[in-house]
Length: 234
Ligand SMILES: Cc1cc2nc3c(=O)[nH]c(=O)nc-3n(C[C@H](O)[C@H](O)[C@H](O)COP(=O)(O)OP(=O)(O)OC[C@H]3O[C@@H](n4cnc5c(N)ncnc54)[C@H](O)[C@@H]3O)c2cc1C
Image (cartoon, rainbow, N blue to C red; front, side):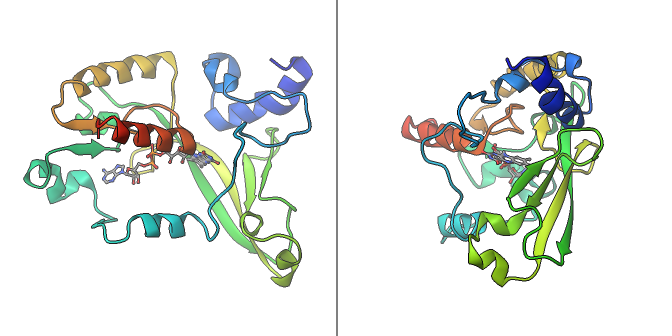
């Protein structure tokens, strides 16, 4: 897609850090989802309208869930909700696909991410919300400077400090939070076996990146939920 120089400088080591595997063991679709452009548009996505909610996602979600009963810190499998038919006719399950079936065919692999967050004594650490580090020299994949998501111009300098997070890509182990499915051949075959028994589960919708074992960006998963709602699948 981009030739050897750009592949080696930008893609190879970054992808290997991200996935913990050599590039030639990874499926090609991982790289195919990167947009390649020959213009000076440095957005990641191609969408005409892009942004993040003013005040952050918590504000958006709080408003969406107003007057809706919602319990956090409640594990579906360790709570009374596991016996969900007492409470509802349908279940939308968004947890890991293999966990729902008690790992009966074995465990799926995941990648996860850990963050090291600290306060820096400068108003502007890196001039941008996200800077990616593409070589093996740095063990983190990117550094997030949170204030740039919300503040612009003088506001950045009115606050003399800044919060940054280094992001480390990590192999998933029990007890961690699973983030990305590892869609190599072995895991895809295993996920397919689980999907076959999932299709027989009455009144249960397996939805999202964990339950479908599929990578989703935010806009596509929201779009999918809205379209399922409109076609009365939900
Ligand atoms: C580090 C990182 C950065 C990302 N950056 C971007 C980005 O810049 N842009 C973008 O578009 N997308 C980004 N994404 C992807 C985005 O997070 C996903 O697209 C989105 O969260 C998918 O929504 P979902 O509903 O499928 O899954 P989730 O948002 O993961 O929802 C699943 C829910 O199920 C809950 N759950 C799981 N198991 C249980 C259980 N046993 N009991 C109770 N609840 C349970 C989880 O707590 C979670 O709330 C990023 C993802 C990661 C990990």
